[in-house]
Length: 101
Image (cartoon, rainbow, N blue to C red; front, side):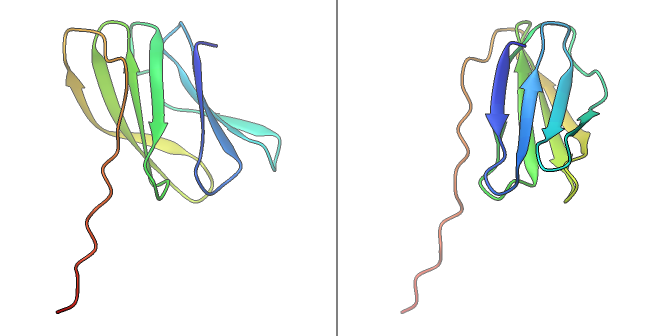
């Protein structure tokens, strides 16, 4: 286990491994779900979006994967990018709330 990230709303824990695997542990049901192995390097960063419908993972070789998450905690890769350098942190930007005039 190399990194972990709790879902912001549900009892799901994302776990990254040195094998490149990303696994979601559903604490309420005591079961786990593996995503497809989209990483070759060690998973070094994991982060959930504010609403929890996306998870981002990055590995030691610079590969970043965006996963979609359903209400049961299952994940599926929906986008990826190769930065060719280690990604050391993730920041999700909240959408600005329109102001009423």
